[in-house]
Length: 236
Ligand code: TYD
Image (cartoon, rainbow, N blue to C red; front, side):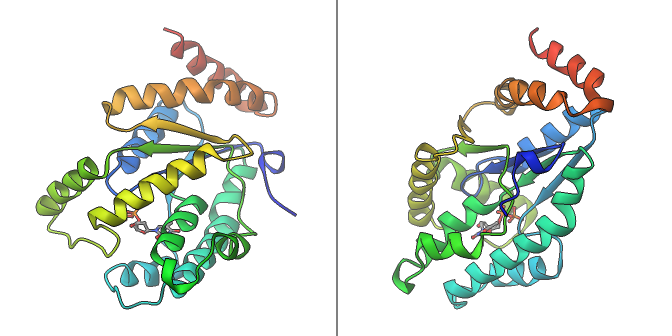
């Protein structure tokens, strides 16, 4: 059985986009916003902090890993993360914000594995146990701009660039992310211009979330009054 919004009281929000699009900053801002309004919130990310997530992070530095191994590991990590972390939090009525989810696999692994017969259908099949988010925000940005951001961050953080962070690859996945969002039959995607200032992006996302929050508010008994307060603030 597919797990979707009717299986939980909380709200499952996913942030997606190419490397350096600003998901992590926006995730943190959303998290603080909900916390300030006393709404129960969990900020999480994929690859996860679990055992499989650790192996994936090592592989991100290694271009010789077969793309099918990446696809299998990301799918396994997602089952672990979904079952043990995301779903329990959603069932308790939390707002869960995940920095990346299934779209990243559908895009990165099929683009990376184009010559290794990694098809969209196969990646979908591997991910058939995943949860269906209430909303997916694609933070869309020009690949040159995001790469420049990453390079600047890396020189300050002294981090190594990972195997997916090449310009041509990033341009390709940007287009693939846009196509996926535009063709989404569930209409759960929203495309956000990520070249804007973070505060503006946050506002746009919160405005969009308003309607879902209101409909969810009916089942958020204990949080309804708090939720209403922050929704009213958004109008000003
Ligand atoms: P990223 O969000 O950039 O994590 P961090 O900020 O910790 O580096 O994710 C790391 C990389 O993993 C990124 O290049 C995208 C890639 N990735 C996939 O290829 N498939 C997936 O399913 C996920 C979740 C991530």
